[in-house]
Length: 217
Image 1 (spheres, one colour):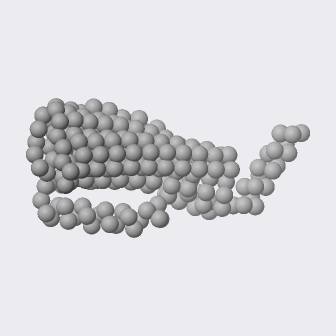
Image 2 (image 1 turned 90 degrees about the horizontal axis):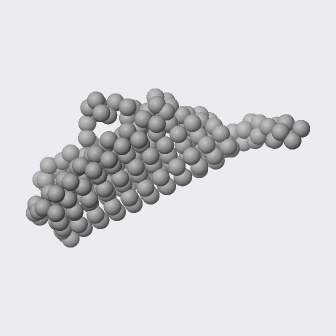
Image 3 (image 1 turned 60 degrees about the vertical axis):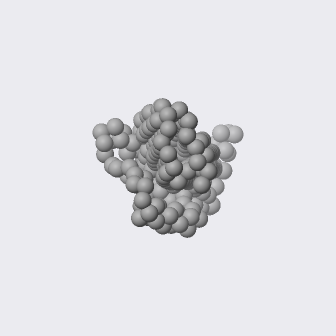
C-alpha cells in the first residue's frame, strides 16, 4: 500500500508540475525545465534543453568516434595577432552565452563521450568528449576538449582548451590558447600564459624550455 501511495504521489508530481521532474527522467523532454535526481539520455542525437541537479548520463554519445579522427580540434591557433583576435572574439561570445547554457549541477557521465554545455561538479568522458564550461573536475579518456576550464582537467592522452583557470594534466600533450594556472604533461603549449608548465618540452609565447617553463604576462 505504501508503495502504491508513493507511486501515485510521484505520478501526480510529474503530471501537475511538468516543468520540474523528480527522481528519474530524461533531459530530452522539451517540456521539462529542471530534473532533480537521475536524468538519462542518448547525447546530442536529440536536443538537450533541461537543467539537471543530480546525475546526468548520456549513452552512447559521439565520443566513440573520436579515436577514428572524426571531428577537428576547435582550439588549434597559431601564435599571431589575427588568431588571438579570433580567440578573444570567441571568448566574448562564450561569456554572453553562459546564461543560456544547459547546466548539470552534480555529476555528468557520458558512456562514450559527448558534448555538454556547462557542468558544475564532475564531468566524466571515459573515451573522449567536450565540455563548454567546467566548474570543478573533468576527466577524459583519450582526448578532451574544453572551452573554459575552471578547476581541474585530467586527460589520459590529449587535452585541448581555449581558456583555463586552474590545473590541466595530460598523459601526452596539453594545448591551451589562454592558460592561467598550471599545465602538466609530456608536451605543453600555450599562446597566452600566466603560470607554469611542467613537462619534457614546454612552449609558450615567450620561450620554449625542457622540464619547466613559465610566463606572467
